[in-house]
Amino acid sequence: MPENDLQTIFDQVLLQMQDLPEKQQQILKASLDLFAEKGFDKTSTAEIAAKAHVAQGTVYRRFKSKQDLLAAVLTPILTEVFPRAVQEFAGQNLNRDYDDLEQLLNIVVLDRLAFIQANHKVLKIIFTQVLTDPQMLTLLKEKFIDTIIVQAEKPIRILQAKKQLVDWPAPRILSLIAASIFTVAIRMMLFPSSKIDLASETRYLVIFLSKALSNS
Picture 1 (tube, rainbow, N blue to C red):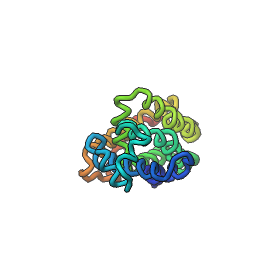
Picture 2 (cartoon, one colour; picture 1 turned 180 degrees about the vertical axis):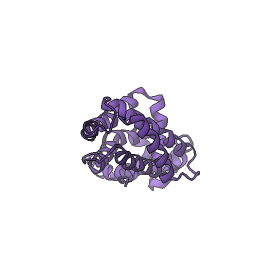
Picture 3 (cartoon, one colour; picture 1 turned 90 degrees about the horizontal axis):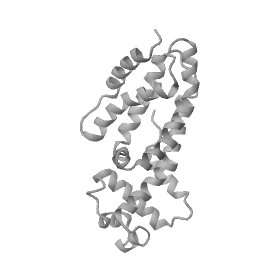
Picture 4 (tube, rainbow, N blue to C red; picture 1 turned 90 degrees about the vertical axis):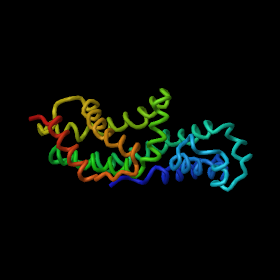
């Protein structure tokens, strides 16, 4: 099952930031909620202030623009929230032995699709910014992709030793899995109102990936 939703972890991270006053925490929580619900461009600072129950001037005391607010929201997500989510995912799904490749793919693919479905609004904000900010892409790679590669080495090596998995480097195997999942993620983010059958999507992806990655 997917780990806690990103907004819940975000709230927990803010509570641990001792240098951030309560009103500023409220502003960042409200910003993430509204950016996720309405989109960055369609959210006004007046709406953020109203949702945070503060005066609009309070917003501008620390954050000079809406862009500064977005940066203040995304920084803890990329540096604290994502690493926590990754560690929880890895602990639940990668620190174990799998009987065969299909078992690993079924569990990992379904878990990631469920996570994306539950967090598609927040992920859409991140995806949009990554497209225009190379530094954010680098940070995302360091905090997310590189960590997953390290954690996935063990089950990959075990399956390769069992001749269940093609003898490729872990990053190449993971990039193929991630790219396949990403195709479904794009639909979830662009068409959130459409109903996506996770079991069906998982089945098709597992069939495709099993054929692509099998050692036979």
